[in-house]
Image (cartoon, helix red, strand yellow):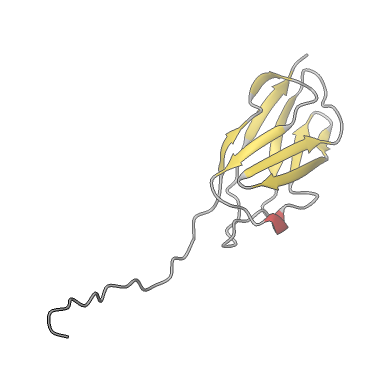
Length: 118
């Protein structure tokens, strides 16, 4: 092979993901949130859609835990309460530790709270 260059570069190895996903942004924060709000969370990485079940997300408020319906589209988790929230109340978004990324890493403990309008 006289006069020709031989390119011998190549990549080897395997990338292992040990980083736990977390919530980057939340649409419902602070006070004055409508009682008919939909909470939209942006997550740090892709989530395994099979881990978004009927109890993936709850709202904790003055009446205890509220049932919700959660859907996933890309890195966006949308949480819709099953009924209007109590006016003038504080709610915390509670995400299941069963939610994982594509590598099986569980969601970091994330606190997100808001208060509904009176």
